[in-house]
Image (cartoon, rainbow, N blue to C red; front, side, top):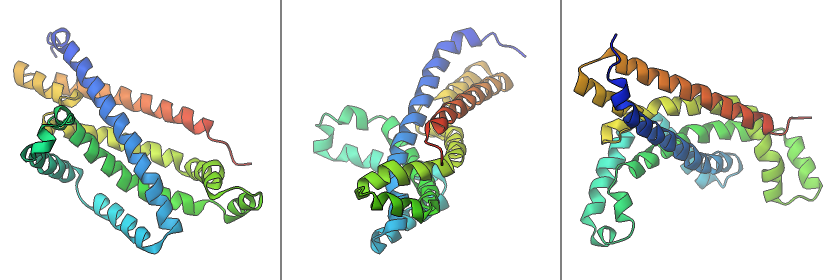
Length: 229
C-alpha cells in the first residue's frame, strides 16, 4: 500500500470532516425537533394530525433516502433560481449551495424514523406517572417537559443512538449532490491518484472514529437523563 498522497490531501480531509460533522449535527438537531412532536401527536391526537404524522413517517421510512435527497435538491434546488424575489433576497447565497438541501433531506429522514420511535417511547411511559404529575397540579407543558419526555427518552435512548449512527453512515450520499464531505474527498483522491483501497480504508477509519465519538457523546447524555426510581 502507498500513502504518499495523504499529506497533500489531509487539509481537504479535514475540511470534509467538518462538513460531515456539520451535516450530521444539524440533521440530528432539526430532525429531533420534528420527531418529538411527530411521535407525541400520534399518541395524544387529534386524530387528523395523528393520521398525517403517521402517514409522513410511513412515506419517509418507505422510500430510499437517496431519492428523497435528489427530489429535494433537483426539485427545490432547480425551482428557487426561477423565482426572482428569491434570487434577489439575502437567502440566495445560501439557497444556491447544495448544503442546505442536504440538511433538509437528512433532517426529514431523521424525523421520519425517530418520529416512529418516539411514538412508541411516549406510549411506553406508564400512565400512573403522568396521572401523578397531573395530580400535583403540573400544567400539560410541565408534565411533558419534566416527566413524559425524559421518561420516553430514557426508554429509547440506546435505540436513538443506533439510528443516529445509521444517519452518519448515510451522510456519504451527500456527495452525490456535489457536497465534499469525507467520502467526497476520498473520491477525489481516487480520481487524482488512481489509488483505490488506501483512500477507502482511510475514509472507513474516519467514519469508525466518528461512530465511536458519537457513541461516547450520546452515552454521556444518556447518563444525564434522570433514572427511574
